[in-house]
Amino acid sequence: MTEKEYQKPDLSSLRINREMREPEETSSRTNQRRVLFVAAGVVLIAISVFAWRGGFTSVTEVEATTVVSLLPSQADVVLTASGYVVAQRQAAVASKGTGRLEYLGVEEGDQVKQGQVIARLEHNDMDAMLEQARANLNVSRAALETAKAELRDAQLAYERQKKLAADELVAQAEVDAAQARYDRAVAGINSAEATIKASVAGVRAAEVQVENTNIRAPFDATVLTKNADVGEIVAPFGSSSNARAAVVSIADMSSLEVEADVSESNIERIRTGQPCEVVLDAYPQVRYKAVVGKIVPTADRAKATVLTKVKFIERDERVLPEMSAKVTFLTKAPEGNASSQPIIAVAAEALLNRDGRNVTFVINGDQLVERDVEVGGNVGTNVEIRSGLSAGERVALKPLEKFSSGMKVKIKTK
Image 1 (cartoon, rainbow, N blue to C red):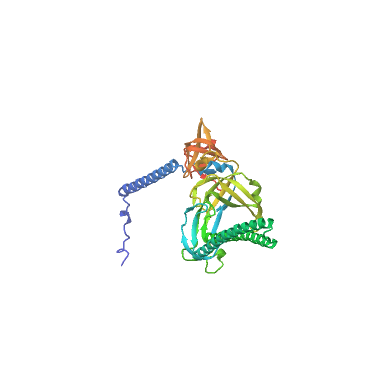
Image 2 (cartoon, rainbow, N blue to C red):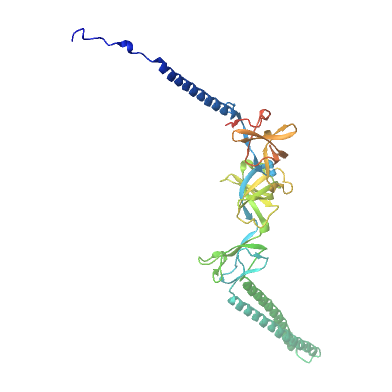
């Protein structure tokens, strides 16, 4: 190809049409501005909501305490101890003799009176012995009557012989024989009377043997346990391996006391006559008034404790022997029935007098809520709350003057 035939391309015809691109660029910029404005608005709204919800509010650390339910007497507590209810008058009733049980007239829980027959052993052999003793007594009494008749005859013969001897009608030997017969009759009377006494004693011994087959209550009491049944062999002290010792166990419920172990280091804080309250583990909601009855004058070297016996002032049928109990020793006796009525209380430092009103600040989540309360008397370091608070609520402590309702707080950890 020649130079003439080859020609450079004409670039002058290639131009950018600016008039056609300008509207497209303008639209893109406008969209970008709109997106920026929307994003800025969203950010502003989020910031406003966060600020409205307290996002920028400072959080105050506060000390807190809990509203409690307690008894007025708890302000007078000296110390507490554990123990058991024990009957001071109780007995395992057994027989004096060995025999088969033929009668048992009580069950657990029955009330018995002093001298009441609780049980009885077979006593046919004892009855036979008693009848024999009574027969011997009758024989002795008959012998006494015979001796008396002999005495009367001997006395009359002796008197006759003395009169005849005075008239010298009989020999002195006959008078002496009559006197000897009279003396023997007198001795026979004495012997018969002694025999009667022995027979009476024999009857009494036989009656005692029969009575020993009766097992009687030694005092007014309640039957706790029944240890034998009709048909079993009963023996004193369980002398045989197959014999029962105690037939029943009884206790005088009016003698129930709590025996509590008090540490040697605390015994100086206890005195006889000191008021107490007893709570049975079986009935923790019931409190019984009591008093220290006796401090046993010896210590348990193994446990380093001193046994203290606490008497009930008030007691009902729910108090049973061998129940576990807790004894609260008090500085003074509770008044009336207040000791049995729980109250709501809070620490005195959680209360603020504001414009003549007693208020407290309840911690509700992470905020304080001011609440009016009605207060009562002091209970130790606490104050009774008659209305306005419930047990278990958390309230803020000092400085109360700087607190306000709605303030954001968090509980200070110790």
